[in-house]
Length: 330
Image (cartoon, rainbow, N blue to C red; front, top):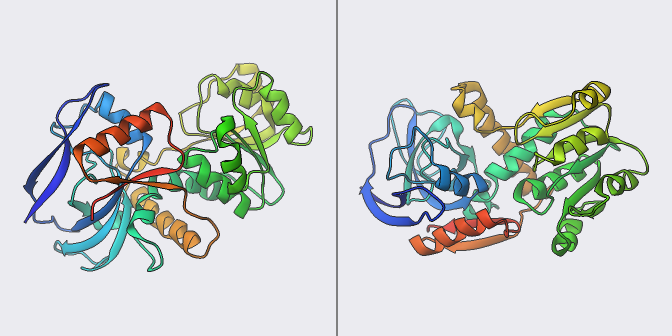
């Protein structure tokens, strides 16, 4: 059996994907072959196409998130069976979702409910799991708390706003003016222009003159010192970009609880338990999608061609994507 895939043959700012074919391997023990029906494009996919990774071997098939059907199982597989509809967030060292087939370990797969299409399921993992991990599994949030969610129109922000409203939080978010209506419809209570010259004052005003209980920081860098200063004493700070930058005086004054949110750490650490937890969270997230607690983000469907996917990845890098781009493979 052969598969068609989109390959990165070179990395750099002018990267281009090339379509090719190769054999589908016999799955190793505890692994399965999934026939991919859809794969989403994430910021990390596009960024890695520029920088690459020391452990990559070119040509490389990118794509972390996908959805499809199990078509072959290796020895000792017990968690899934042939015919199961599954989705996953994969290992950034191996990627592989921009293809018709991929070999994956069974323990990272989560089930797709009958009412959820493969395209919608593929749009969820990276962004949705990041928001779910931060707000449900890490931060200690209770009804009535206020939270700042940076970049509400992005994938993580879009899911995070909905999860925060599911938890009955008071949500303040930042975005560009063209996306204000969109993030308001997601449920944000206050939508602020991220370029406002007095943004810190605007955030405090939106919080009713109070400092913040929690912040989900998806932008980092220059926003970090400002955000640390906006927290209540012993407030909660979840960062997608490592340890936040802040003056030591601010850190000691605020004494925040800081959470570093990194799905890829499950693979980098080699933690089987953490990888299984990704699948558990995926089941939880798709269940919330099925019962209407949260809703899919806007999806732009991308044809499975080298030109279309290359262009979509460059759009992702330019930061002009609202919602999710999903490659339709079948």
